[in-house]
Image 1: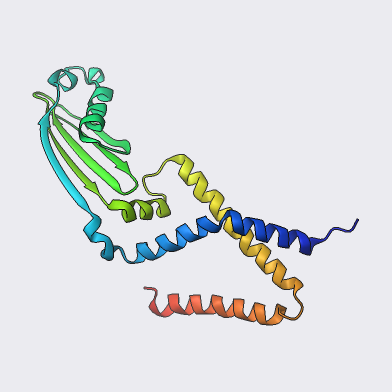
Image 2: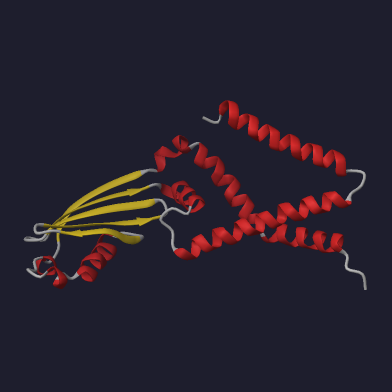
Length: 195
């Protein structure tokens, strides 16, 4: 039985295209929204809250005994902080840290002695969240792997499409010329207007 490279390429191109259809759609739409972030500034919401936590959680002479988990969970449950905790700093008088996730960030400053805190939050809305997912910003490791897998799928879709073109004798030359013209247009736009 003879191996049919053209048939395999067609099969791969069709099914990889269908698997990656919504991936292409997502990255295409968010590519547009990333280029026009000024149109979505109305979705940005800021909030500042002052309050007090139980000072026994923060007022410890030994910094290793500060109840970091209880403190962060307090902000998650009472103020609905989201994302991963980052930038934890503890000095003699203050504890500070942040929460970061796609389309979201918050900063916390706690007076170690009396437990008084300042909580500052910024939410960038649905479009901001989608834009951060597009960039892989403040996402987990799983999302980064998903983005890498998506890139591999899109590379394979492109390559199998090119291979299919090479098997079409009547359209091969015109298809290759159009491909090269597309590359040339992209280069010229970058060269003259990209910076």
